[in-house]
Each structure stands twice: as C-alpha cells, then as structure tokens.
Image (cartoon, rainbow, N blue to C red; front, side, top):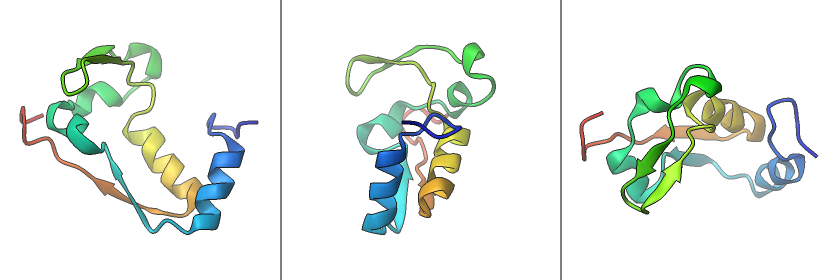
Length: 88
C-alpha cells in the first residue's frame, strides 16, 4: 500500500523504526551528473535523461520535492548533494 504521495507505507514504517537520522540526495556517483532543474516542476514535464554514471535512464519522477516530502514522512533530515561534475 502507498500513502498519498505514492510512498510505500511498509518502507516508511521501517525507515521510521530504524531511526535513520539523515539521508543524502542524490546519492553516490549519480550526483556528479545530476541537473537539479530536471527534477523539479510537474512530473509530466520532467525530462528523461541518461545517467552517465550508470548508463541508465532517469525518469526524474522522484525529484527534489518528492525527496523532501519523503524525508518529512520518515522523520529524517535531508542532506542535499551538490553537482560538482557538470556544475548544474
């Protein structure tokens, strides 16, 4: 089952139970090529882009606003990563 944001309620409950204090977004190599403008605004208008770190497509359906809502839902602090690879 999902909540009103589309987040799985079983996952939300488990993260809350674990008491994760902070979560980084985006994580790993992904941040070095991530363009923040691709992950904001109406979901239907967000571009699908190639994630050069993993050679896979990113739909940008989980962007900045969704991450902030997810952090609030699980009671964790967001840590926003900065793209220093391409400067966006």
